[in-house]
Structure formats: structure tokens, C-alpha cells
Image 1: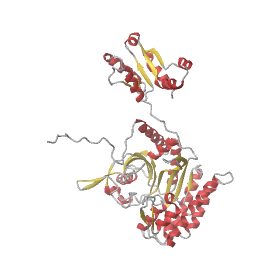
Image 2: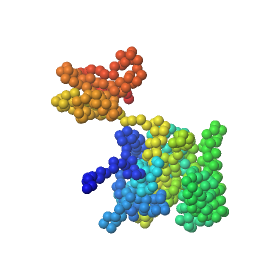
Image 3: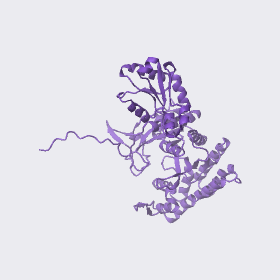
Image 4: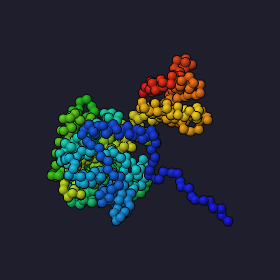
Length: 507
């Protein structure tokens, strides 16, 4: 007779495509977001927190995974309605702008930070839950709102530690791209236009030859799988490639602009002139070029020149709801990939104008523009630049030498906490004192407090500087060890002042 094995235990593992974040990571993220929020607040934007759940109808069919509309979200049916976890922070804003349109100021300027969820195939660095940090202006038709978003994004990157010269914000206009599509003879075929734009957006990954193949019959990817093409004629594809060739023109001009003899203020004007010539006779294209010119003038007047923000005809942005200016923030410094090869870090933020998104709810045109920062990618960039703390500092640990005196130890903890110092008493088995210090090390505690029976009788405590102690143990000479004792005895009433002084020495 088979032995009953009992109930099956669940696997202790994170679901595929998700991850856990621990203390140091959460602390680093919060610190970065606080700096970004301070910039947004300085620009006059208000915070907004929306529900993590929206109706599928409110979210709309604007997922990046356009081949599987509504399958890209985590959705369920409830009382006849389909609900889903939000896949970005823009669609919920559109719903809020429509729902509270009689109460909100116009324009409405808001920023939002939080997790979003996408039911997509996970991969290296690609998760189904991740953080976004958005800022949007709803109700302003002027491209001054777009220019302001770009300037604010530049300030936010610098505020978190991305130095000027290590990033560039690239700006284009979907109307310019619409003009190209019009000249290709497909402007009245929205699905084909969307497919072409998605293909153009892959230029940085597959190169112009790859784009040429994808615009026509298709190509094999690196794995050998065949990717179907869009089906354009050779002439149509060539018209698109002629436009994209300006990307290399823009790059070369950007390189020239780093030289001493190049008029940096004239860089954007130079690129705009070339775009205007490429658009030829498209009215919608000319409208887009005029808006780019306005944005460049506004930014230049505020001191945001081509060293930070440039006009770039290659920027597309894959989402289908953009209607005007589009922009991306790219980090330009090199990192090393998993195979040891140098490469540029790439994009960490993007956005643009979406004048028709709120209209879905109200039936009335409501202009809007905004940007979204990829929080995890920006954190990774800061780590690559050495701008993140390697670890979060743990609490001061008050060790326990006598269980009967727990109230005394908790009193020390409370005195420290009352002065804003992070502290805790050891709550494990106090029998082995060595284990308490091992616990403090594992908690990355800067200081341990020790008071045994003898110290209590004399009204003193031992204050052990764990950071200094580790340094002394690793490299100090005997003389340094004597001159910088890692443990001092002080009166009980001087505990808080001593701890504060020690923490101050370590910043």
C-alpha cells in the first residue's frame, strides 16, 4: 500500500516574468523617484495616484503588442465587465481627465509613479511587472507644453545623477512621419501605416538593410526565424529609406557639433532644414516641421541647446496614439554587455503628444502630451555610472545580554528612534553573543550597542563602530588601531550623542 505523502507543498519561487525587490533596491528606487518628483513639483505638476485596475474598455487597444489586442493585459471578468491591471500610466490618466473634467484645472499637469503590468513573453531584462514614472499636461494644445516636458526631462535626468554629456533627448514629430507615409502613397491605410512605423522603429536594432527587408518581403532574424514583411513595393520602401537616411546625416551633424568650430545653436536649425526638404510637398509634414521649429526655438530661449536636446528624424515611438511631437531620452555613455562587448546604454524615457486619447471618453478633442521614464532602466544606468549606493545602511542594533533587562534595551532603542536614528533591539535568541554581531553584520548595521551586567551597574554602555571595525580589521596597522578605537565606553545618557557623532563620521 502506497504511503500517503501528505499535501503537496507549493514551490517557493517567483512567478515567471516577475521579481522581488529587497531593502537596498527599494531604498535606491525611492531616493531616485523623490529627486524626480522634486523636479516635477518645481515645474508645477501635481501628484496623482490611480487605481491599479481599470476596465479593459477604458484601457483601449493601445498595447505595444498590437498583434494580440487585449491579450497583452492581465484581465478577468467580473459581473459582466472585463477588468485588467493597468499596462501603463497614460491610459488611466485619460480616464481621470474625462471623469473629473469639471473639477480639474485646465490645463491639468500631473505626475504619477507606480507599477504597471503587461502579459507579454518575459525575457532577459524584460519583466511583466515594472515601475514607470510619468509626467503629463492635459488640455494644452501649444507645443510649448511639449518643449516644457523635454526641458523637465533633462532636469530630472541631471537631478538623479546623469551628467550633461551623458544623455541626449531626441525630438521628432509624428506629423512629419505622416507626411512621409503620404508621399509613399499609403497615408489612407491606417493599419499599413502603423506597420510601417513599427518597422521604422526597429532601425536601431536591424539597421537600414534590415528595415528595407522588413518593409518589403521580410527577413530572418538572428535565431533563423523568418519575420514577415510589410509588403511595400520597392519604390515605396525606397521613399521611406530616403527619409531614414537622414538619421546618419543627423548623427554626423551631432558629431560635428561637438567640435569647436561648429555653431551649436545652429544644429537643430540645420536638421530642420533637411527634414523640410525631404518632406517635399506634404502639408501635414510641413505642419510637423513648423512645430519642431517652434520647439527648438522655445528650448533654445530657455538655455536647452543641442548639448541636451536635439531634433532627430529617426525617432518614431511605437505606440499608435501619438499625434504630434515625440521624444526619447537616450544615455550616450558606454557600458559592457554580458559578453564583455562595449555598447551604449540606450533609451531610458520616451513620450509625446496624444491629442485623441481623452476624446475616446468625451467625444471632444482634448490635447495632451507627456513622458514616461523607465524606472528600472534608469536605476541600472545610475548603477553603471556608480551613482547608486551599493547598499542601504542598516539600523543601529542594541544587543541583548540579559533577557530580564529587555525593558532597558528597548528604552535605548526608543531614545535613538526619538532622535530620528534608525534602531532596533535584537529579538532573536540572545544566548550566543557572537550570533548577535553576525546578525548586525548581515543587517549592514553601522553600530552595535552593548550593555552587560557590569556596564549597567556603572551606568555606561559600549558603542561599537562596526564600519570602522571592519576597516581596521581589513587594513589598519597596530598604531591606527590604537588611535582609532572601534569601540568606546560612554555614559548611558551620552548614548544618543555618541551614536549621532559616529554616524556623522560615516556620512
